[in-house]
Length: 461
Image (cartoon, rainbow, N blue to C red; front, side):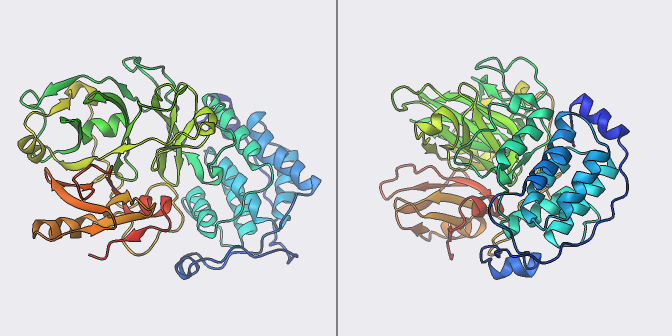
């Protein structure tokens, strides 16, 4: 899936790398990583000692030469080879983050093998024989290896040399840049309501055309839809369309919405993008082409402010400085037949928005588990178990295993936690309060919910 700038691809194709003679680092005065859960140690082993403080000048220079200049200047030669040896001898696992960042864009096997070997030496693990970037990155995330000094500067230089459109995105903020990787697609930076123009990206849809339920003859009753209700108006967003678009900016029930769908984490969410604090224009949400632990990184094309997609919180840029937190509306994941039967007045996105495609990532590409690094996963549920996620009035995240909740509700049992009450709605589940007010829940894979809410409660059932 890897893409790169033309000059970088040519450089990688033509580059030759002298075989490195690398030895494992000797012991050094350092601190251990933070205490890790037993299940992480059982799966990933014990992390190495990690140096603290600033990097020696020779190591900083080596990082610049081997890991940054090799991309920005499209060059690899003796200087880069020697610099890579210096990195390998540094005894500093933190540098493996920058190595992994570079590996994501490397298509040449010789350089990729060398980078993988150096990262493995720094982490004191066996060099992976396959999926080298994924294995190294999983290890770094699971062990929570700290980032090296000036990490964002180095990472930003690598990423923006390949995709210049990211220059406004790689800025300081309330985001863990260690976990950000490339999803294999380019940024959607088209202005609002210009989404009929083709792009080399995952194409968002603004103000999408809709039809009545009766006109949607192209949908089968068992097709999955994401149903949303606002002020008594109902709309279905077919998964076939959302897997192509991944982002919709719409208006429903007199309210503006931004609706991201992360195919990788099985989560469609709906955020109100109106009635905002004074001085903030409606955010127009787009797909950046970046991921954070296998969850899409969305941003506002007006300000280039990045949002935490799962939380609806602006984490960089102007909107972060204003502390913008978007309110959620509930998204009901169900089948088209049940949704239109329960809500016959519903509208539905028009067929042409699927662009002639009919993907089923959940049962195809993603059926074997996450295809991008996620690190460690809370072992209380399988990684792809469907949950209904919501945050309580007291600020506590809670996950309900969907299969158990559906069974309990179907039997007439009460499913509650603090102020949260689950109810069946058109074949799906919705969270409301004691008075029936929508609380903004959505469905997601367990791995995604638990990593963005690491202290989440899990309904016992």
